[in-house]
Every structure is written in structure tokens, then in C-alpha cells.
Amino acid sequence: MSSTSQKFFLYARKSTDEAERQVLSIEAQLFELREYAKKEGLEIVEEFIESKTAKEPGREIFNDMLAGIEDGKACGVVAWHADRLARNSIDGGRIIYLLDTGKLESLKFPTLWFENTPQGKFMLSIAFGQSKYYVDNLSENIKRGVRQKLRNGVWPGYAPLGYLNDKNKRCIVADKEKAPLIHKTFELYASGEHSLAGLREIINGLGLVGKKGGQLSISNYQYLLKNPIYFGMIRYNGELYEGKHEPIISKRLFDRAQGVMEAKSKPKTRQLKPYLYRGLFRCGSCGCFITTETQKGHNYLRCTKRKGNCTERYTREEIVSEQIREVIQTVALPNEWSDWLIAENRKDIEKSDHSSAALVGKLENEIYGVDNKLDTLLDMTISGHLSQDEYTSKKTTLLTQKTGLKEKLAASREQSHNRFELTESFIKALNQAEKITASGNLEANRDFLKKIGSNPTLAARTLRVPLQKPFALASIHKSAALAALASGPKSLFYSKLRRERDSNPRRAFTLNGFQDRRLQPLSHLSIIKLCS
Image (cartoon, rainbow, N blue to C red; front, top):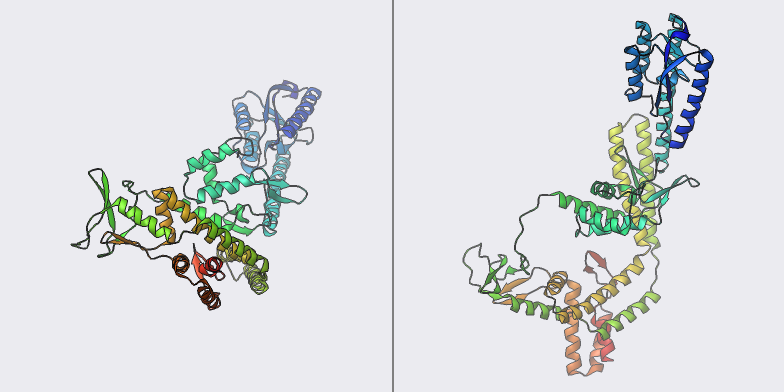
């Protein structure tokens, strides 16, 4: 049968996802193939155009074309090259099988000669094999390049949300518009006050959008909050790598967010009545929890008596609230006192020696040691002494350790200033106590009591609250200051305080989980000022 009486399908394909290059390439193929068909006198009964890779079977348009061959709608195919038809063994085998059965009689290529003979089919199978080898080799080269980028700490693909690809630096850099919103996302969620749905509403409202300008979904936020890329680590195929890009958040903030997410994933307990002091106090006699119940329009606090009979009586909630206010007032500082203390503290900042070279050197040596262990770990893996799973596990542990050390190093360089900031924060907290007691806000009074005290008990209708060390010290010296002002003489008391000031100036105090060896007893400053 001559080619002029045969019916042909025209097939054009481009695998790239870049739209402009797709259109240009396919148009070029169509032009060349139509001209070729006209020149050869081929009857084109239908054109099949596809934009999909041929490295895997499953192309819909290609399959439709072969179905048309099997139905006898055409007996030949015109394509630019054999690699346009197949780059995998299954599709290539299907074409050769159709040639073997006679349903496909001819293949025409402007760039490749083919004749439907044993030799022609052999050469065609070699062309298909070369196409598959090209894809496989290209894939391996890409994977090797990705592995090298990861070893260099470079993100190997399109930048994640909050970052941009910098072609000049060949790495990712923080997006100045989106990075602050990413940081805000972690801060809000780590507070524990927002669900993912609520977080989505807030952050989307602030203008955070995806790469294509679309609104982020709840699952997008869940993925974002779990992504270690934002504190400087790269997670790729389940393995962690140390990134060289600038972190948007600290690891501490990331860990706090993970803790909140883990807590929220646990089953929720039943909701209890919102009593003001639920679960806050224990009975001073038997140690059981104090519960609250309502009688005749008033709330009463009483012992649960779970350990047996207890003689403690009911206490009105109003009485307890007033006693809480009185406890807080024992540490409250008026504005005049706090202003002077802050001014004195800032003078100490100017005099302070910010040198922390010893600690910095120690941390740098530890980081250097971790790097050496990572190098040794890699050598052991290459030499076959460690399996890939063992390498991945040990590497993750060392990288996590290194990240912690680097954060400690950064913190130590600011430690001197931080301790003065902590002192000022403590003074402001004492001044805030004055405002809280004056506000009459019972919830604020309750929350501040939790901050300054521990293990509060209620017995004989009297509240007892052991104050935490720095607040207990503040309470003691405030009382002493007021007593000194009332009794005098001021000069004698002043000289006594001067001797006390030098007795133990570096005693350690703990405040909100931080240890500060610089924090001086409150009276050493305030009373000296007031009594001089």
C-alpha cells in the first residue's frame, strides 16, 4: 500500500510545564510536521497535541491516539522524533507490538528514517532505548545535583512560602513582605490562644497569600507550622540538613508551636463551669482541692473533703478576692519607686562589662566538635561502617544539638544586656501590681497571684500564699522600707542597708524560668533612695 492511500495521525508533544515554551515548541512541531506531510503526500486525519512528560506511561491523549490506531481510524503516525512518542519501555513496547500485529503500518519522522521491517523495528527499539536512557540519566543527574545542594545547605527547589529564590546568591532569602507574617503566625499559634481555623482568619486578614495569590487553607498553616525550614533546617525526603539561609524564627519558638500543636491534638475533656478560682487553691487542713459552688446567688469556696471529714467551713468568694488583692499589694511598687529603680538599673547597664568571651569560646568549641562528629559520621557511612538509617538518625541528633548550641551562642553574646532587661522587667512587673490591684479586675488579680506565688492554701477562711523568691524578697524589703520610714532614724537604717548590700550581691534568683545572678534585692536600691 502506498503512503498516499494511508491515513495518518499527527502527534506533537512537549513535556515542560512552562506555558510560553510549550506553545512555542508545539507550534514549531506542528508547522514542521504539516509541511513534512504535505511534502510526502500524507493524509492527516487527526492531530493529537499533548503537554505531558513521556517518561512514565499514562498519557491520556497518547492512549487515545493508539486506541484510534487499534480501531482502524488510521494506520500511521507522523511525529517529530521517536522520543516524542515514548521515553518509557511500556509505551515503546506498545508501538512496536502494534507494528508487529500490522495495526500500525508506518511511522514517519522528519528527523529519523523508519521502515516497517525487522531491521527498522530493531533500530526503532534502539531509538526508544536511547530516549529512556536520556530520561534516566537526566533524572540521576538532577538527584545528584539536589544532594549536593543539600550538603551545601542550599534549598534545592522553588522557595517555600516566606522566602524568595535569589538567582545571584543561588540560595533562598527572606521575603521582606511575607517573612514578618510567617513570624507572626508562629508567635500567635505558640501562645496557645488560637486554633488553626482562627489563625488562618487572622493571618489571611493581614495579607498573607500563597505563591499564586490564593488564600491559604488550614492544611497550609498546619504544614507551615511543622516546617523546620523557618528556623534554619532543611527537611528533604525525611532527612534533616543544616541550611545556610537566614532563619525567620528561633528554634525555641518553633518548639513551642510544636508543643501547642501536640497538646491540641489530644482529646478534649468536658467543659466545666467557669468559676473564677477553680483548681487554684488547696485546703490548708487536709490538702484536698478547694471547689466552688453557688448558693443563693453567691459563690462559695469549700474543701472537696475527698480524704474524709474536714472541719473547714465555706468562704465567700468576695472575701478571697480581697485577700488576693492584699497579697499582691505587698509586692506592689508605686510609680516613684519603680521609676527610680529603673533609672539606677540603666546606670548599671552603662557600667557593666559585657564581656562573655569564655562562654562564647566554649560554645564555639562545642560547635566545632559537632562539625567534626558530622564529618566522621559521613566518613563512616561512606566506608560502610554505618547504614544509611543509622547515619540519618545520628545526623539528625547532631544537627539538632548544633542548632541548640548556635542559639545559645547568639544568646550568650547578649546575655549581659538581657540580665539587665530582666531586672527592669521585674521592676515593671512590681509596678504593674500596683495598677492591677487598683483596677478591680478579679481575673487580672488571680493571674498575677499565680505569677508571684505557688501552692496557695485556704484555711480558717484565710488565704496563705508562699511567694516565689524574688517576689518574697520584694515583699520583705518593702515592709522594711515602710517600717523604716515610719520609725527612723533614717541615717542609722541607711548605714545598715549599705552593709547588707555587699553581703551577697550575686545571689541567684529565678523568674519565669530564667536565672539571673545580677538581680539585687529590691530594698538595696529603693530604701537607700527613700531613706537618704
